[in-house]
Amino acid sequence: MYQTKKIASLLIFFGIIIFAFLLRTPTFNLPHFRGDEHHYISLAFKLETQGIDGYNLRGVDIYSAKGYPELLTIVPAKDKGHILKGLEQIGVTYYDEPLHHMPWGFPAALIISHKIFARNEPYRMLTANDMEIIKQNPPGVGLRNFRFPKEIVNQQFYALFLPLFFSLATIALIYFIVMNLYNDKWVAFTAMFLMAISPIDLLTSQKIWADEQTLFFAVLAIFLYILSVKKNISLLAFLAGISCGISTITKQNGGAIAGLAIILWHIVSNADNLFKKETCLKTIFDKKLILFFLGTFLSAGYWFYKVIKIYGEPLYRPRQENLLESAKIGWFKIVQSRPKYLYLVGIPYQNPLFLLAYISPIWLYLNKKLFKSHCMPVLWLAGAFYLASKFFTGEHRYMITAYPAFAMLSAFVSNRMRLWIDNFMGYKTGTVLFFSILIFSIFWSVPMAYETLYHVGALILKPF
Image 1 (cartoon, one colour):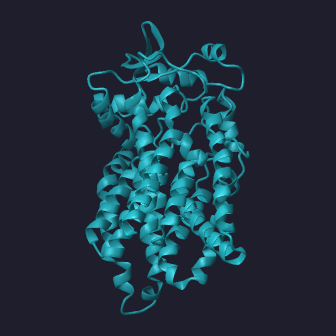
Image 2 (image 1 turned 180 degrees about the vertical axis):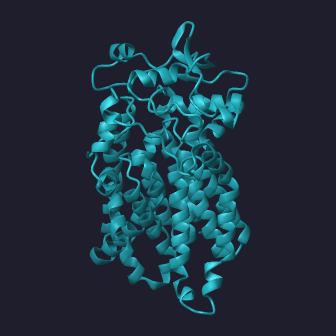
Image 3 (image 1 turned 135 degrees about the vertical axis):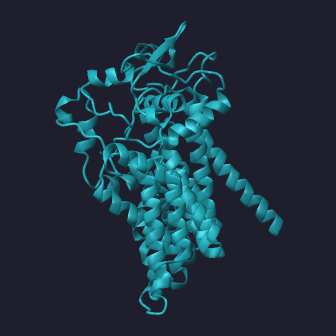
């Protein structure tokens, strides 16, 4: 019986991973030239050829290949280059900076991937001619049926591999976090599934963006720290810090959310010791927490040293006066006009079961035995909302590091509700209702991502 259950669990685990992969396969036949995608590839090119001192968008030209106008190649420019000139034409000048404001973690990963999958080839990406899209597909369909020539379709695989891999790896990590917190496979598989169909994760995993990489290393940091506490292995806390640092130098919001979650968890789960004279200092200067900070500093410190050296502040963000008036594209006005409650309402709108995460703190009082485990994802989510309130961006993907917490808490609550309905009404009513809602969620959530992807968008504008 045990062996049968183990095989069934493996089949479900890999079944969800395969399902998630299949939902993300459109990326291989989509153009990847908009919404900062070409910026990241250009930054990888500059980082490889000029090092950290040349880490910016200056001096980059992009040319179409002879015979294949869809195939674009990155080459050095003698002046400021096509990218900065193109941005200036639409009234955006703040990208012309000596050190690019987005950290180098993702471009560095692109360099490694390029050396593995596109050795001795230039940095390339694919675009699509708008007239060609219209010719091949009726209005409203966009890129759904678009296909690149088979001779060039794999030229951007080196870049597509990274966000796809990190997305699937994160979904797998969620299983192990849940099992260490709740030891409940039903909750673990549900959380994996909810993450697999999340519209924002479907979007970011099919864009050459840094979001999936920062998400993976943030989740890995939390997982390793949980293990370090559970198994009392200090080295794991140090490795958690290394992972948090990598997340930070990929995209700072990821490392910030993970770091805050770990700090809050340490404080809340050790609250009794903090208020005792004999254990207060030992709790504050906890060995694992110190090793976590040390690991974070070692992996992220050099980037912040360079930023401070050039800009005089560690959290530098470029500024452009009158950007909303000077920019000739609607992007900035759309983002700025989105309401402050965008995440609070928009995330559960796109992922219906995520709404259950908001009532999950109740179980901190209903089940004291689960307090230490359950408070981790609760604090993870609370910390993410706190940071979002302080640094609102108007883009859902900046909250993606909170999505695993949403998925875990929603899975936990839905499982409790399923069991209660089963016991109250009988006939596995709760289980049937549960699976019905999961199926509904697929048809509700997945099309939102595809609609944006197939129209080369960067924002899911539902509900606002």
